[in-house]
Length: 116
Image (cartoon, rainbow, N blue to C red; front, side):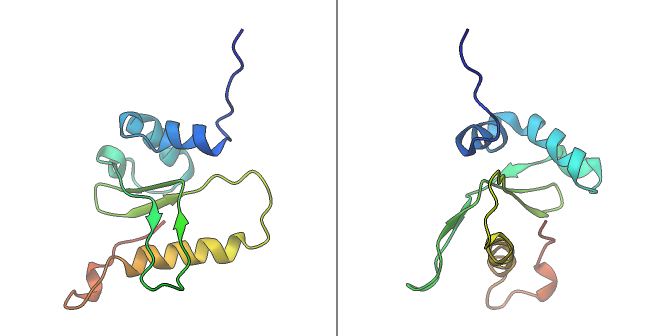
């Protein structure tokens, strides 16, 4: 019998939920944990999970899964099995980057979509 790989492994989690071929599985996960209308999951687009550096001293990061929904909500999914003391600041940093990357010079403030 082959050993079963745990979905709690970062690699396996990304294969299951971060692969465009599995958007139905991703939709199932999201609809079970988020209070967002089910219709939002009709069009899921998995996007580049890299947190880009804008300056040399900026922090670099890679999200587990990053996607947009039908109404362009931006959703960030992380799996964390061990306690990390700096997890809250890390999540705040990731979330703020996902907001600021949506807007640039000349864009209206109301173009910023919800980040979850």
